[in-house]
Every structure is written in structure tokens, then in C-alpha cells.
Length: 301
Length: 297
Image 1 (cartoon, rainbow over the protein chains, first blue to last red):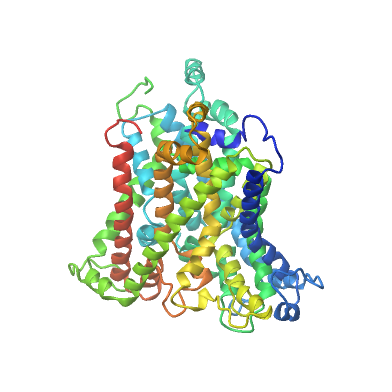
Image 2: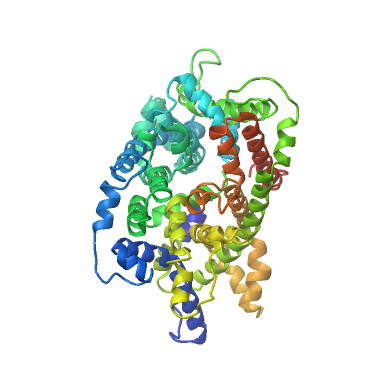
């Protein structure tokens, strides 16, 4: 099924349309532009609101660009916004998210890539059954496994710690990532593997010297998938960490939806935009690789 | 493809088995074990801590008598039906538009898909601001002179789920469009040629030939979207916090509150078991259609 996601990226085929301004084209592009406006609007509103002072937000139009551009809301969101008694801004959440995302991405990708490799080249009795359980498990609502995992982490002595959360992200990232790597590795010619076996290379030798160097693109796809997924996580951050370690999404929600104080919409929008910035940068920088990542998640294994 | 190694059966292929330990543990302990644990303890009277004191179906009876749970179920069904119909219909229509050999296809796709990279928290908070009755759409229209204009879904219990739906569709339709586009591109060019030779109009070709051919894509999309809807949580937390009152409560919120704040474990576990049941209702017919009959899907 990998060819389908490739086909999605190969762009339009065939001859270019002949007439530029036919009725059909006006309808077609008109609809697409109107739809695009619906998609762009929230980003536009976020940016515009975050650049206005509060007086202007109160009297103005949320869609209008700022009369006077101010970066004060950004500064405030980053270093002064309050959650409860803490008033050190979103920066704490940002660094927490970095500290959570980096090891989670690395650990989950290492484990899943080795899994995929073992499933394709080193099949053992029952390996496919475990893989099937894994894939079906990915459809189970997280809510079903929330509490058992609390117990598990408590038994391991890592409940509420960074490594507890890393483990949770590794567990829930495993089905999709294993599927991704398994499908990719299955497209690498088996002869290569057999030749390496004849030359006496073992499990790890083949992994590090053949599979890894040949699969860099899929590692990039996996990194994109995991960075955005883990950065955007909210539920696991709330359940499995303590307030000092809350990721950015949780802190953002606490800042914006706090009931005390006067609502500062411009600061809220700056904070929202700051939280969305990392996945947005990853998205715009990665382009078609992002599409490939999510398409891989959609095809059956 | 098993390798010929020395030693007993257990030690054959040892490295692969060691490497697969995390996967085996995840599958057996977390996915299977965790699910069984939840189902078993949903039949107990556990309060603050899990205790194996069985109370039969008491938790479930209490669950289905709780007005908050009934509201949650009503909400998720309403949201689910509309979200399914709209994401799939809009996703398919957009994919068809994108498939007309248009210029700037990459630009349009980038625009439609970027919300999918954002978290539900960001999505919820932006739309909370746009739908703010004082400063958002309603406020602007009123200030333009239409004084009685009312559009405040987040403050009106009757239509609050549609306020969430607007945000949910914004976030997710781009993704469905990409899946559908991949499906459309996977259809053989010869089908189109044949239809053109026979003089079948384009819309008819789409409706009567392409859509039936894309059945697997539709089913896969349906399963992915549906299992996402059942998990709906972050968006509601960010956009409405379940309010006004309890008007936008969803099952995932009920589970979270009973497990972690109301200290009524048995009740929370019973609710999560109901969520599991609803996923199985979606999943089992799909698995049957996909994998039943033929050996390898």
C-alpha cells in the first residue's frame, strides 16, 4: 500500500488545462479559495490578536490587522503568564515539552525500528500474533488503559517522573511506528539480508550496517510523526506527570482557561501560537514527508 | 525465514527475541493485560484504590442512571454522526476538487492540512476566541449594525456541540482529504479513459464507478475517524471545559474525572469499559470485512 501514498505525492498527471478562465475553472478555484480561507482564518486571527494591545482587542475587530504592533503579549506569554501561583510564563512548559519530547522520540523510534526489523527479517514463532495484538491495541481508547498504566508505573517506581512519561509515549507510539518500519523494511530486497547472513553478519550487525543506512527517509518520517504527536499530547501529560513537569499543552490550557484575573486575550493568543509553533515549523519544513507519515498511519498492515 | 542456529528451540533466533521483548510486553501486559484489568475491576466497588470486591453490574446500573453520563453519550453520538458525515463528505469533495489537475495543488494541500499538525488544545483555544460572543464573529456582525444577530454556540447548551464540531472539522478534514486523494490517485487511469469513451459524465463516473472502487479507502477512513471521535477529549477540555454547565460533556471526560478526581475508580472503569465496547462495535465488523474470508489483508 506504500505506493498509494507515493501516488498522492506525485502530483497531477496529464496535460495542463486548456482555457484559464472557463466557468469550470472559476467554480473550481473559487471553491478552493473559499475553503482555504476557512482554514487560514484561525491562524490569521491568532497572529493578529497576539500583536495587539488589550485596548485595541476590546474595541477592534478580531480579523483586522493591528493598528499598533506590539510584541508585549508574546513577552508576557513566554515569561510572565500565570498558572496558579506560578508566574514564570509558558517558557517552563516549553522546556518541559522539550525534555519530554526528545527522549520519547529517540526511545520510541529505536524500539519500533528494531521491532519492525525483527518482524520482517527475523520472524519467530508468534511474532505476527504480537504484531496483530499491537495493531488492534492501537484502536483501544486510551481511557481503558490509563489506570492500569498508573499501577504499572507505580510498581516500577517511575510514576510522575519524566521516564514514566517517556515509557507511556513509547508504548502508545509503538503500533504505528512498528507498522511504519515493518512496511518500509519489507521493501528492502531480501537478497541483501541473505548476502549479509552468508558473510556472517548477525542480528545487530545487519541492523546497523544495512537496514539503518538504507532507511534514513523513513526515520525522518518517524521523527516528524513522533515530534508532532508527542508535542501535541495533553492527556498523558496530565495523567502521568506532576505539575512541575507539565508539558506545554497542559500549561497553555491552564493559563488560558484559568478562572482568576482579567482575561488577556492577546496574551492567550500569543501563548496558543507559541505552543503551536513547534509542530507548525516541523510541518512547513517537512512538506510531503508529513503527508507520507500520516498516510502510513492510515493504511492497513 | 527463520535462521538456522545452534542450540535449543527457545534460544534459536535469540537476539530477535530479546529485541522484541518491549513489543511483546506492550502487547501482552499493557494492551491485553490492561484491558482485562479494567474490565474486571469495573465489576468491583473500588473507590480510592482498586479492591477486588465484586458488586456485579452495580457500577453499570449507576452509570446508566447518571444524567451526566447520558448527556455525554447523547453528545458524542450527535457529534460523531455529524463529524463522520461531514469529514468524509467534505474530505471526498475536496479531494475530487484537488484531483482536477489544478495548479498550486501543493499550496492548497499545505493550507488544508496544517491544522492537523496542531494539537486539539491549540485548536480548541483558537476557536474559543473566534466564537467569543463579545469579540468574535457575533460581536463583529453586531457592531456592523445587525444588533440582534446571535451566534454564540459555546454559550448555548443547545448548540454547543456544533461549536466543537466547527473546530473539529477544521482540524481533521485536511487529513481525510489526503487519504481520499491518495485513494483517487490509486485508481487506474484506464477506468477514466473507458468512462470517457462511453460518454459517461464526470460526476456520474465519480459517483457510480470511482466511489464503489474506493470502498476500502472509505472503510479505513471511517474506522480511523470513528475511533478518533470516541476518544474526543482534549478539544472539549480546551474549548468549553465541558460547559456551559454539563452541556458538552463527553465520555472520555467522565472517565477521567471518576478515575482521577472523584476517587470513584469502579465507576470510571465501568465508563471506560463502555468506551471499549463502542470501539469493538466499530472494529469487529471492520476486521471481519477486511481480514475475514481471505488469508492476508
